[in-house]
Length: 92
Image 1 (cartoon, helix red, strand yellow):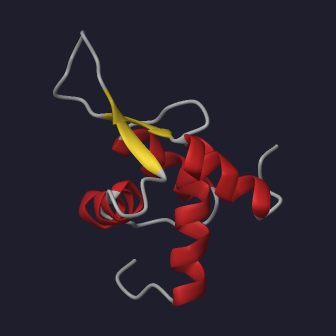
Image 2 (tube, helix red, strand yellow; image 1 turned 30 degrees about the vertical axis):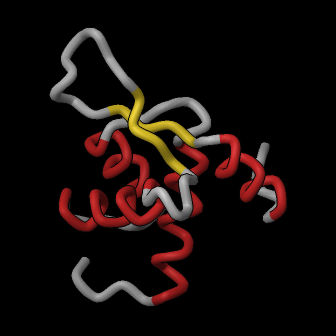
């Protein structure tokens, strides 16, 4: 999925924030997004959207520290991200 519209990108970002209410890896995010119809997103495309949300200026997602398998990154939604979802009516 190389050409992503602005609307699709926004949906992907909102979905990533929802997944982060628990935690997720890039692999899980790709599977979840595929189940929502976003098939064919590359690992790099998903990582770019995670990086956007985790940017310190936004701080909507954060990488979670792990003791086991630290090479497999886990992400979770921050308080600011939960507030953003609540304002959008997507916090449940």
